[in-house]
Length: 110
Length: 115
Image (cartoon, rainbow over all chains, first blue to last red; front, side, top):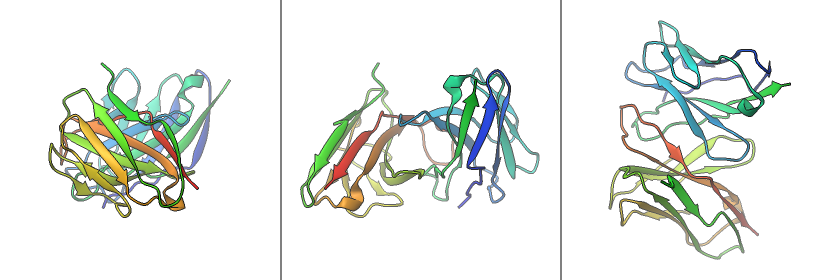
């Protein structure tokens, strides 16, 4: 199973870019990288996903290294409402489980 | 469009009691999932379903049963609740599954306490 490694916590100043790293060195060639976030005790929310290429949507950008062993989620202008736990996820073998680790707790500081 | 709705939101049980958590989705999704989240931990998959009438075990299925009699509903049952099942339960659904892109839509969670 491909698993991920994320720093347990990060701080970011409001208005600055938040760069959240993730290592997934055992990822297989057909496994997507997903990012979700969980604000307080709400249900997780999808942010973005990617396979090989960098991706951007209205919420964030996803940068995946060429060897696909790591990725970075970028929130271009962090706001206080971006304070949350961010999960970097790849699919486990069997492809019916997105393995949520403990994620990175991002705190946006005023 | 309500998305994914879980009932009840909160419940307190005594050890040995039984209960059912209901998850309903109005997005016509094929796949549905039940996760649990314990303090300071990520989500762990209990059971999932790839379509009406089908269910499968996830990472932590012991002590739980599920049913998917209707496409839009996924029920999670505890036959004999134990304190170790005190947790927040999240239901999710997705249009696709397998080795393909999928986006999971989550409910707001159900907080269960077993005394």
